Length: 100
Image (cartoon, rainbow, N blue to C red; front, side, top):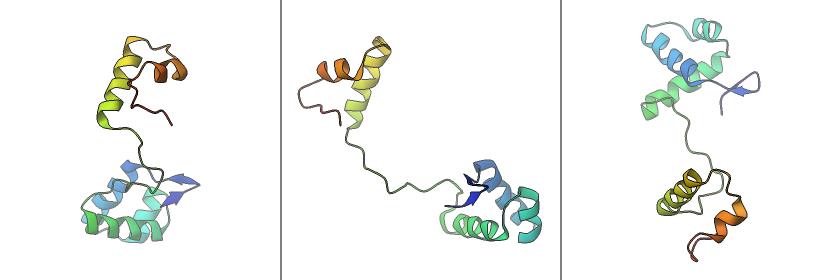
């Protein structure tokens, strides 16, 4: 992950890196303009050339446990009653639905 001051580099800054590189600006000048390191500029430019975008890649966190159909059912129940608790919500779902 490319971080500036302990925070992720914003999408606008990543897009700015690409725009400035396309204008033949140097990595050092871009780093100063964006407020990040030259190494960050180099890495985002490399990722852009490899993937064609500057969006974050999917993390390696816990995979989803619900299907799209279950997500939609949850959403509909919450829209109907925004104050429904998680315990009541899971009790009102289909028997195959398990809230983890």
